[in-house]
Amino acid sequence: MIMPGRILLWLSSQLYGAAVAVRNCLYDCGLFRSHSFSLPVICIGNITVGGTGKTPHVIWLAERLSSVLQVAVLSRGYLRKSRGFREVTPTDTTTDAGDEPLLMARSLPRARVFVDRDRVHGIRKIMAEEPPAGGVILDDGFQHRAVKAGMNILLTDWNRLMTRDRLLPLGRLRESIRGMRRADIIIVTKVPPEATATEMDAVKRELKAGAGQSIYFTTLTYGNPVPLFPETPPQTLTPESSVLMVTGIANPAPMASYLSTLCKRVTPLSFPDHHRYNESDTSKIKSAFEAMEGDRKIVITTAKDAVRLKEIAIIAVHLAEVTHVLPVTVQFIENEEEFLNKIYHYAGKDH
Image 1 (tube, rainbow, N blue to C red):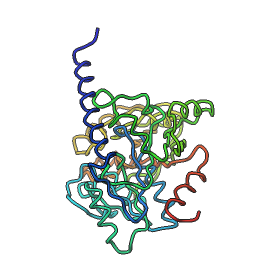
Image 2 (tube, rainbow, N blue to C red):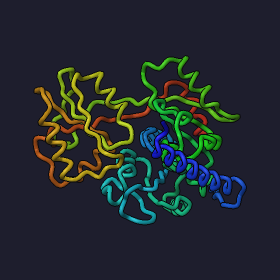
Image 3 (cartoon, rainbow, N blue to C red):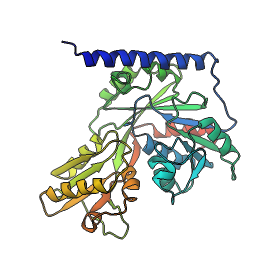
């Protein structure tokens, strides 16, 4: 029996898809203007709502490009309270900049990070900055059609390929998978370590890359836990550790899977993506931590959550002492040099 609620979701997704298709058509035929720029603009985005590992990929690429040119990263600054164009500095708060731009600013000492909801205006302002930028990485701008990026990199999660998803609100697609055609490069992210070459070939066939498109595969590599507060001694994860995994991200499953390979007891405590933590949340964390068994108890969170957690005025001392951040970075499964050569060639730089 088909539920009435499911029918309403399907109808809503059809209406949403039609509206997005009309908008894209207006850009494609030139009735809505897309702006090009004289400096390289690389867009890293997705057509799903969160969970593809976009921020680690932006940081990874910005780090490498910064060795050959002055990189500017431009983000919308989701959930920030400030308005308009501004540069993000490591001393800002999430209220000023949003959590992801602030994490980028603290992770990229050689790049400059900016926020502006109007990406065209933001790029123009960046071009007027001193020292001049040699290239712009547009964070989450794939649907921002007003900017005609010179290179579009589209991310899709191995665990939820965009080809297997549905349009909002029935699924998590922001637009039809026909939007894949605008991508120059497609990266399948969060590939599990046990994935075989045969499985990756099957994914390539499913994605059906068009002429001129390339497909790459990446995984997330986790480092050793780092104390949330620098004055706290670091702890090492062992099979005897009891982990409280605190996350406010779209898809914490890969992190939970990784921690489960190191420790027998992992207790997830999940909050919504971009969740702004408050003192009530720390009480929940404290209660969950104290309810766990074992002598080697530790709280593990993500780097994105860490920038928000550190802004809470009151965290119990015994909780602060055991809260650690799990660093994560991107690693290409294969053909990393080929990918970088494409990027450097577009940016007009030799590798």
